[in-house]
Structures are given as structure tokens and as C-alpha cells.
Amino acid sequence: MKLPTVDDTRAFGRRLASILRPGDLVLLTGPLGAGKTALVQGIGAGLGVTDSITSPTFVIARVHRGRIPLVHADAYRLGDSPDPRAEIDDLDLDASAEDAVTVVEWGAGLVEQLNDEYLLVRLDRLDDDTRVAELIPYGGDWAARIADLTDMEERP
Image (cartoon, rainbow, N blue to C red; front, side, top):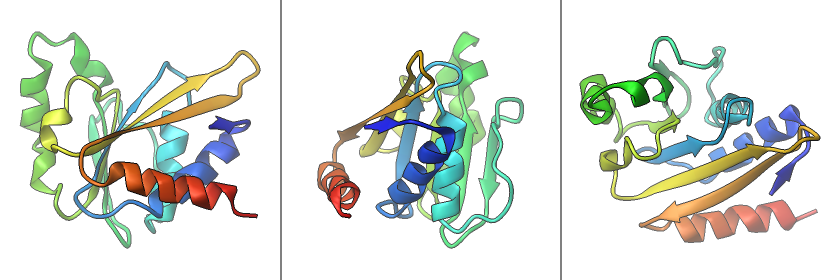
């Protein structure tokens, strides 16, 4: 799916939020500048979060209150650790996982153990600044939910 502008990326995040529910884990992967935080801003807006969502790179994780709480984490700095999975465990992200949507930037290969079922969103940024999003379901009913989202995208 092509997202020509940052605003389109946020709008897609709002639509993605419509298929999310408490207990969901969403992993975001892609290079710097691909739109991961912009996507989370849209997800937050769709979940009813009213406070500002910024990259949690230096605080690692933030909890945002909304209609459905959003746990926003960034594992970017954890990848250089000798045991990044232990650091993820120390963050105790699973403590609020049942009641919130958990979105982890740079989480692929590190946080999948938090949930047997999750959605991987691969973002890339083309030379013309267009973002491209690929949704990859893992387990559960993610494939059906993604199909629902695709149906929404195709409606006028």
C-alpha cells in the first residue's frame, strides 16, 4: 500500500486502529524516516489518544490513555545490547498487554514472545518520499482483520 505523504501515513494509522483491540501486538519495522512514528500517531488518534505521541527512543516505552490504551515502545537502542530480549522483559510490556494495544517500533526479532499472534507492519520510504506499507499477519485472526481493512480501503 502506497502512502504518498506523512498525513496519508497518519490517516492509514487511524484506519488500522479500527481493526485493533486490547491485547493486540503490532511490530513496526523499516529504516529511519520510513514513517513508523507517524503511523503510531495515527493509530493513537484512532484509539482516542489525545496527548502528543512522539518517538519513545530515549524513554523506550510510553503508555498513552485513550478509549483503548496504547503502549508505544521503541526497541531501537536495545538491539545493540548483549541480551536485548532480557531488556524487553525488563520493560514489563506484557503487564498491560491484555488491556492495551502495544505497538513496538524496531521490535522485529525482539518482542514476538509477548504474543503468539501479532501484526508486523513493514514500512519503507521511496526516493520520492512516498511510504510503502506491507502488513504481515502472524497467527490468530489477523489475516481476516487485514482483509477487512483492505475492504475499507477500497470503499469510496
